[in-house]
Image (cartoon, rainbow, N blue to C red; front, side, top):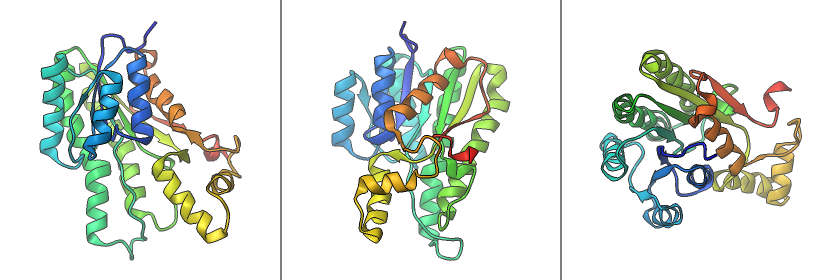
Length: 254
């Protein structure tokens, strides 16, 4: 049985990596999809692939968040699931990070999901409830060096999920965060390429090195993180809200 049959889902950052995997997985489970992101060409390609709707725009733009939800209502009649997946990483410690990089990271990674939730929640309540999934990171639980903006934004997402769960649970709206570790995606590839160049190794070797202390000894695939999001989006997790699902191959247990 399709776990999202009859559901309408919005996915931000849906054009590549984890977002594209979520879009494809949700479509395979019966959802009607609205995908958003900055690159019109890749968005339109994936929307055509899944029979969905592409709404290009900047995840940090509050007007865009409203436009995405309005488009979902106009095209499909409502919104049942909202996945805030769009994210960026601007490195630097508290001393190093520029004001511009700090604000941009917080705007995209934390304020954008808030704006999406703000626009989606009233529509979900009108339909009897819904599920909000915020793609955070293990960096929201344990900080990395020189990643102050990224770490703070991802920690904020976990708290945002809890706040939404507390405030809107009585209306049938659930909210949870997913916290991946290393994932093989274009963003992950950039980090691995930098490590590979510094150490004179291949990208694959860099992924293996980064995951050497993880109990499963490997990074996740984007499809594996999409599966985690599916669980939280579907009625399989109907009693689960206000929590963070860690998907890091056991790294946090070490």
